[in-house]
Structures are given as C-alpha cells and as structure tokens.
Image 1 (cartoon, helix red, strand yellow):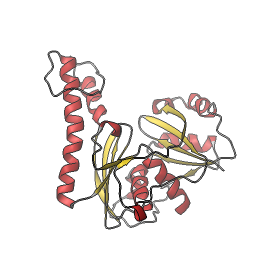
Image 2 (cartoon, rainbow, N blue to C red):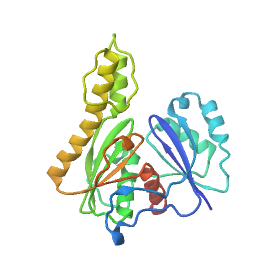
Image 3 (tube, helix red, strand yellow):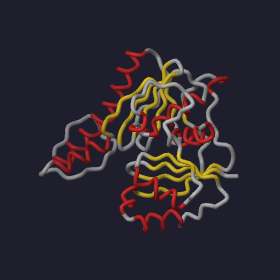
Image 4 (cartoon, rainbow, N blue to C red):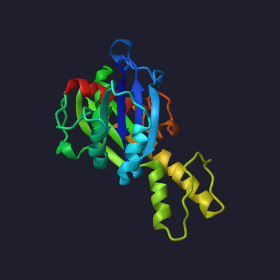
Length: 256
C-alpha cells in the first residue's frame, strides 16, 4: 500500500506519495555522512495555503490530484484551517502530533503551541540513529531545533529569509517587492538592487551565523538542512533533505 503524506505549511501545502516503506537514513550503522538525500517521494502536488480561504476551491484542487482511496493518508499541519478540510476530504487521515504525545523525551513547555513540523524534524533525526543534531528548517519561518543526547532541548524561530524581504516591501511606502535570489556581495545602485542584495546577504548570512553560534554553544553537532529555501544555504558538512519533515511525519504516525 502506498503512503500519502501531506505537509500543510504557511506558504504551500505539499502532497507526496511513497510507494513502499518511507526510507529514513541509517546513520546508526553507517555514521553521519553529509550529502543530499536521493530517495525522494513522488510529488503529487503543491497548493498555495492562501487557497484555504476558499474551502470549496481547495477541496476541488486536492480531489483533482486523484489520490487513490486505498492509500494510507498522514498529514502534519501548522495551519489550523487545513485540519478540518483535510479530514473532510479524507475521513481516515491520520494527523501526527495531534495529542501532544511523542515517543521521545523533550523539554518543551506547552507542546500544543509548538509547530508539529518541528517535532517531526526531531523524530526523523532520532529514527535515523542520531543522538544529537541541529535541524534547520528554512521556509516561511526559519527554525533551529536542538536534539542533544537524545532529548529535544528546544529551538529558535526566526522570520524566513524571503518572508522578511516581503514584509519590508509591505511596510515600506517607497519599496516594492523583489525576488529572493542569489546576489553578489556588492551594494546596489537603486532600491530594488539594494533590497535584493540586503535580503540575500542578511537572510542566508543570518542563518549561517546562527548555526555557527549554536555549534559554538552546544559543541560539534550533525546539521540537517530542510525546508523550501534550504537549498540556498551552504551544504558543506551538512545533510540536505527537502523531505525530512515528511519522513518524520510518517515515522510518528506509526509510533503514536
């Protein structure tokens, strides 16, 4: 039976399918190896989260993906509006991290206020055999979650790299939105160039600086990169997997 996993984020709702058991890296026996995950699922669709404001349209788009009813369905959501709609479409869908029960120790207070994607990210690290790791999830927000000696210690939440630039355009009367893309470390000669360069350098640079400070504080750690913008971050000595959260969702669905 195939497994369909839905990740309802603040920007997009991604839907993927694994045809067999969801593969999780085996760092326990092989040791942590920096690189890029190669065993990727089939992408069924990506729907803008703004469409949740129009439930009938959202349902039509999801149902148009022709996901087999025989598939098992799991979802992880940081968007409350998505929960009820997805459960209407798939009555037997399993939502992970729903009851605040997790098969690993943590020091998190008020777990119901913590995005379940963060618990999924830590779960994948544990399932992969890592005892300590720093998981960086770069999306609408950038989160840094610390697994130390088998315990989820907590983390940091920062505005996403591209999100900060969009907000600047919204709040700045004389500024227009610019694309978030690679820029050289040079100054701009107009507002658009200045914004693009500033967003890129402080966005990627800020994430990199934070990783380095956390490693200084907590010692050498295995670093995992995931999230929609993580491909823009330096990958040297790090493991990159855009589907890390979805692997954790499937793992937790089997555990709780």
